[in-house]
Amino acid sequence: VISEGKMSSVDELVPLIKAQGEKVKGLKEAKGDAGAIQEEVAKLLDYKKKLTAIAPEHELAIVDKKKKKKSNEKRSVPSEQGPSKKELRMQERAKKAAEEEAKVKKAAVADADVYGDVPIVMSREMSCRSWTPIIKLDASRTGSTVWVRGRTHAIRGKGNLSFLVLRQATSTIQCVASASDEVPKGLVSYVSKLNLETIVDIQAIIEKAQVASCSQSDVELKILKIFAISSAFPELPFQITDASRNENESKEGEITVGLDTRLNHRVIDLRTPASQAIMRIKAKTALLFANFLDNEGFVGIQTPKLLGGASEGGSSVFNLEYFGRPACLAQSPQLYKQMLAACADFDKVYEIGPVFRAEDSNTRRHLCEFTGMDLEMSIKEHYFEVLDLFGRLFNHIFATLQQQCATELQTISQVYPFEPFLFLKDGPLRISFAEGIQLLREYGITEEQQGAFDDLSTENEKILGDIVKQKFCTDFFIMDKYPLSIRPFYTMPDPITYYDPKCPPEQHLSNSFDMFMRGQEIVSGAQRIHDYKLLLERVHFCHTSASHGGPKPESIQSYLDAFKYGAFPHGGGGIGLERVVMLFTATTNIRKTSFFPRDPTRISP
Image (tube, rainbow, N blue to C red; front, side, top):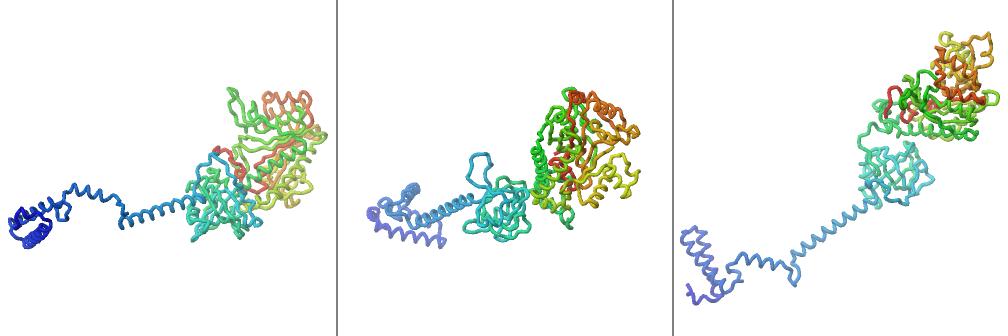
């Protein structure tokens, strides 16, 4: 043991500390006496204290934990010599992570430029995009880049491809998404996950292809960009494809959509190509009617639909309260169009507007509200002037529809197959009511089944239509000289029978007519009474006749008064627009030709 005075050298203390440490270690390993071990540890600590006093930074000196923490904090500050290898590795990893994150962000930004859901269109801005209707896409534009908007009609994935059928009204086209340098994989996946009926904008290149299932069958679109404008809910009331199948050729296992389901979800049903085509033909028919009459010098009018009395009498009116007074909805514009044409000197007028009939008829050809196309015109000598105009009008409508709506007619026939409508190009066939009855007699219809002076039943109308088609090769004909007893009060009587004292009243005829398409009435018309005295006579007779049921004279007093001051001879007729469209396209139910049909059981949607 070295004396205290001599233990002042680091070189002397270090060997002693090491030797004493080995001694303590040996005692512990040998599990020596605890008192002896404690004594030797005390000596070791004594040596270390002395070393710490003269060389506190030595590695064998006793360390102050608080000072060591501060020292470590100081050492953590980068030295002027640069980072350590460990720090360099950490910096390299951080750099790579930042680069990867930036790459992901850049890719996300790039993908957002080519596909995804866009914000709600709220008129924030206008782009310079040029939009192309799907119906205009064909092989002549191969290689062109276009923007189109439509609904996702069908979607399927196949490997690294996604196929999408885009629908726009009656037109469809196949679109293909394939990953490439220009098209990210995310776009392909995005297309496959879109809900059906979602509205999308697509930028694409037109390429030649053979796609028989689409209306644009000679091309397809190679998708470059696609954005969802308005997403549809995943669960639809029914699938458009199910509602677009051939009505007469449903296969086992295929889902069909019933009429009630269609009408309960009419907005969805109207998206089907067949419904779109029907409504476009309906719109075209009304336009042709108006344009033809405009060119003939007719004036378009708008007559009241709220009336203080019934238009034509009878019980088939919708009654309502009008500020404490009884009123009804107009059954037709009949009285007003007469007043305007014959009494107010507009000469020739037409109207397209709603007509209301409170008939509790749940048939395939009746509606409680439909669109009437009415015309009224002054005549010079004979009501055949009206028939001549009607003949030219309908031939114009039929020929133009077949020429200009061939695509729509073909679309309809794929779901509701029908035979093309036949009409005589030189003008419609005309037969008298008596001749029509005679044709029915020759067919075998007896007097009991159809009276000679009774209105035709629906069944006999169809039979007569079949007879006329077979005999004259036409689906359209006119029948005139109806019995006066089955026509409204304002109908001009046939002078030969009306003033013949030997002719009984029930056999009186009238200057009236009906027109038929495929054996069903679509027009009712006549020469009207323009003489005030005769008109008043007929009003009173029809009102007091139990079988006729005409209106009360006082309920139509303003109409009667209009004829006191001179009225032109005149005639006209009313056409049911929905029925014309139904029969021209041979659609099985008139409700399919009304946007939102109203019948005795349906007032919604």
